[in-house]
Amino acid sequence: MPAKFEIDGKKYKTPGWEDVLFSKFFEYLDEIEPQRPEVLDNFLKEHYEELSTLDDELTDEEKENLAVLMFKARWSAMGSDDKFICYEFFCVDVGFWCEIEPDTIQEAMNLEQLEQVFWLLQYEMNPANATQDEEFTGFEVGGEWFELPKKHMTESTVLEFSESAQFQAQMQGVEGGDYKAMADVMVVLCRPKGEKYSYSEIKHKRRKKLFLSTTMNNVINTAFFLLKLNETLKNNLLIYTLETEKLKQEARTSNKDMVGLL
Image (cartoon, rainbow, N blue to C red; front, side):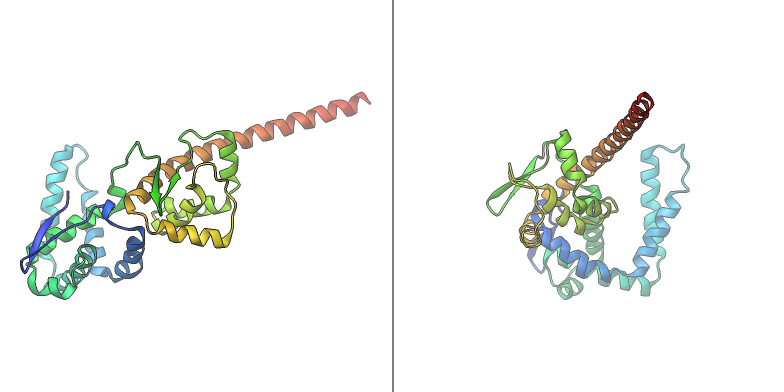
């Protein structure tokens, strides 16, 4: 649910993933995320460490209520200098997502509202917290429909993907939370109906640029699907390897038997 607020009489609201282009998310990772202050990361790290000490016998509701109280207490106890550093980043972060100049936020937005909007964005703009669309099968960009592989992969599809070094290498990054790797993964996996995969550096760069103009809801749903796909691929490759080894062993045994008959 987006947050709505006003600054100097002008109305703003926080975006959803359907409003954010993949290229804008790249921009955030390249330009905004590196500005994140260490004091803020340490604050969150210590908060989560404290949460891990809660009694396991507490209900989820009790844990949630305690978490809120602990968060507020820790934030209130933060020194003014450290808090000012955090507020400066809040202005940059909120300004980026809501398309407001950070200086305007500093001058005209009250701190309570700034905190509320920032922490909401921290949750909403984290792909891990997005809701998966179970009906998602592909997306349109540049006037062309790009579809995902079939949900239950055929043997030929498994072979095609297992031979794709680009897919395997980049999926490691996606599994580690690196959404920048998704652009390359999508180029390999998402294609118009009937198109066969054939690597070409020029074509790869052209399509990657095209995919950067799609919205993040498409990217995130593709990521959810491909993470499941990769697990299926790993399982199929394991079965394929075991079956291949079994056939090789049978072939070796058969050859020995043939030699014994000669």
